[in-house]
Image (cartoon, rainbow, N blue to C red; front, top):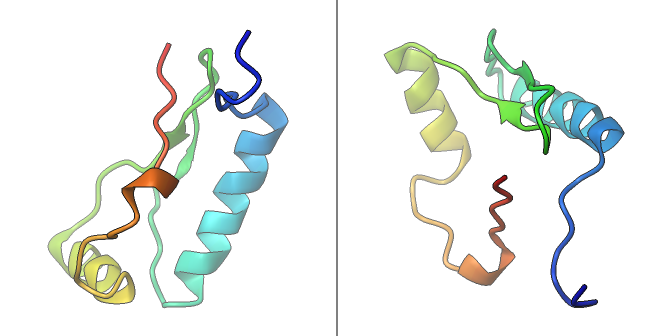
Length: 78
C-alpha cells in the first residue's frame, strides 16, 4: 500500500463530517433536510435534493466562485 495515498474516511468519521456540515450550513441559515450518511463501503455523505432558494443560499455561502485549489478536493470511490 502506498503510504502517501489518501485513505477513505472511517465510518464513524462520516457521521462526524455530516454533523459538522449540518452545523456549518446552519450558521448560514441553510438546512438540507436530506443531509445524512450512506452505510455503503466506503460510507458516503448524502447531500440530497434542495429547492432553488436553498441552492442559491448555498452558492452565496460558498462565495459563488469555484474553489481554485483542486489538490485539496478528494474523491473516494469504491
